[in-house]
Length: 218
DNA sequence: AAAGAGTCCAACCGCGACCAG
DNA sequence: CCTGGTCGCGGTTGGACTCTT
View 1 (cartoon, rainbow, N blue to C red):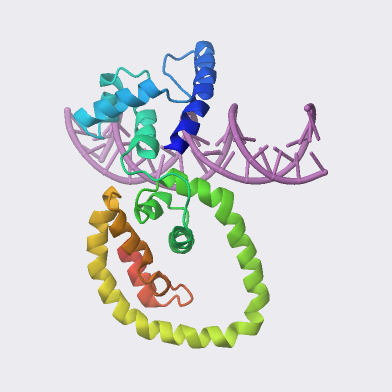
View 2 (tube, rainbow, N blue to C red):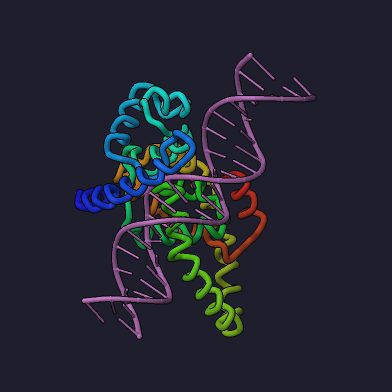
């Protein structure tokens, strides 16, 4: 992967910086950028012990890292089927909608986006989407006066459709739960993202049905 | 070409939840 | 019930990279 090559050269630099920092540091624990060797050791150890008991893994891998650091590295970088960069429009839209629904609960949002990590989504939000949302908010305020009546009509339709959708989604919900937890199946993922999300996450109506669904979702 | 500003992202930190003893 | 250890989450930071002047 080209991205990975870029990454490794970056990491070489960071590694050096990290090493320099560690020399100064009082604690023995390694900090900063992970080296390829550390990554490899961590991955091997997790293969044996599984991704749990992070403190044990850190020790068993012979890494001078705290368990927390190992967990983070695994979750955000080494875990299989992780997608990096190139967040699609559909994914972006889903993030926006989920954020509207859930707020800054990145792990939950990430759970709906196969292959994406909470950290990546959080970063993406902070660097791209927060501004976008801000601008949209301004625009919406301006347009609010003009389109109020039109939205009201759409809202009524949404309520009718929602009742049907909800039942379907409850079934799908269970299936998705299994699929999204591993993020491996590309085809399945596409299906999840492209399902009728506009209706599914239509927040223009914040009726009791929506709230019911939210609590279920969370 | 150089400097400064802005952006991106990996990693760290602190806190709360959970669990075993 | 209490306590200490561990885990997971969200917020924040720091440094590299990119863009602009």
